[in-house]
Length: 554
Image (cartoon, rainbow, N blue to C red):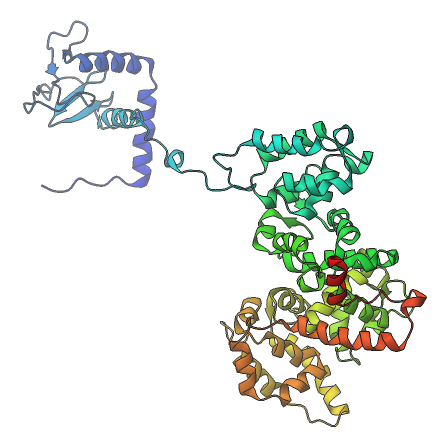
């Protein structure tokens, strides 16, 4: 049987237009509605119209009805009449071999009604249950709720502690006991005190504290979310630098390892600024200036806060609270800050480490790409807080933050890739310095080959931040382009020793800790020969651990 001729696009559009015109006629709608009712009931349809004696009938069984069950195999059909019969002015359904055909006024057979009905039947099918309804909750921004948390029992312990205080009111000195009753580390006492309104009244009543802590237990389900809620401003779910000031001030006031600092109150803010910057340096991995609960969970900060209670020597907590590290950072800054206004300019920073840092890199630091102080853009000066980031990144280029710090500086166009042009831009000044030292510099092409072999970038000729974090030799890469002193030190080392150091990374103390320990010993030795502290110029030197231990035993 020859295949039916395919309608051309223009002809098909005309046929569709005629069908829509026919379907929109009121008489067509009425007849179709009547026929549909007969089809549903399985009755025969009388095709006779008016006075016409030649009547045509056709019986539709359940097989012809798309809404009925297909249980019968017999199909009935009726003749369409003689060819000489005049065309009907109404539509005539046809039951030829299971296909319902509708004849319009022009005598053409159109296949539309059954397909429309089938589409309607499918749309009425029940929609299956959405899969999302069966997926358990997996995101808990404030911690996973505990199933068997006895809030009333915890509140009873707190009320018992408050009953020991006069008028059931706790001062900041009493908050250590309250913190332990809340099952919190000791040095949460100041955040607890301030969150209950103690910073405004000087005391906290049992009713205010219980109301605050009950709400805390109901909304915050882990230590991280509780700590953020205690320190953050109302309505904020993140911590900014000034949020840490009351907490750190309480550490300075009450920790036995910092008792010697009480008399030198001028240096309290310096120490607090240093610790706050180190917190953001290690915790705020997004560089947003806001520490989120997620970032705090991934860090070891709260573990260090808990260790403050156990460790009498804060210098053992080298990641955040070490006083010796603060002493080194501040003394290094004081050497550069000739007018002692806590700001330095490019000429001051250029004197760091006997001008080891290239001028092009110093310009990039002062461009604002790695700093947050707005005064830098206005006055062209670097604050003490930004110097903390600079010194730690300069002395330890193996950490993720320091790698990101120097990558931002070297990425001149900010496209996330260190191109060969950018590398050559920084290497040119290194060559000039080497020539002034009567050292023949390595041609850039040869240096570039060495660096590409060192980093092994995923894409040839393009070094990304991921490449530098993966190679474990980022400190050598960076020093090659902007630190002449360390570059020469690397050149004099045995290449195999460098590989061994990379393989044993993480087993020893960090480069920053080594540098801080060495510099502290040097500064303390210099301090004994001068009397700068007595003049209030430098902060006091921390007493030995033995002295602190003896005092605590007494």
